[in-house]
Length: 239
Ligand SMILES: [Ca+2]
Ligand SMILES: [Ca+2]
Image (cartoon, rainbow, N blue to C red):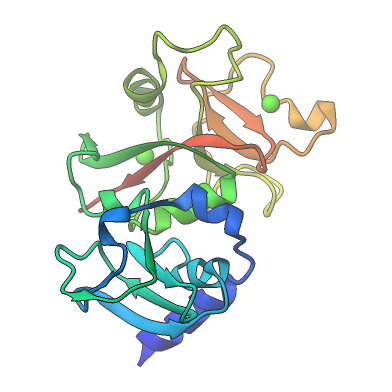
């Protein structure tokens, strides 16, 4: 029963999803269109629009189909391996990150933790939701070794521009907005170790709302406005 209560909560809390956000979390999967399957099916629901349908899915399930003619929404926990029935009007969307659920090849292991690196530009809140959708959290950095490894592995690229803060950066779970001091948001632990880039954090003395923490390509950190779109790194301790 608790599962149903949780699902209802998810639907309510994601009602502010807009159609525009669909493209940040999902990509269309034309191979599934005009078909149905009961494999991994969470349910079929009435839905007035694509936005409402994606809100029901909420970034927490692997994929969903929307049928505009029938105003129906089919939510699948994971991508179904085969589509068994033919039914016109269905258009399907697959979560960009949920495809990497579990610890598949896109999760890199380092010191017993697993890391996923995503280059779909998301706000800090969206990035947090995206990591939670695959049973992980935005990365929490315990020491210099971890920060240096993350930067060297995911962020330092020959294609980075000269603008040090303009690309090759990624959200961590660091945030100052709720408690008034820097914490790792999802674990709610205080930051015992910090590794700020020179002149950072700058939000307080510039009087700007730079409440979220990103990692730069040199492994050091910058406080940045949470509504900015950025790459993300998710971390989990078990698969
Ligand atoms: Ca960590
Ligand atoms: Ca800053």
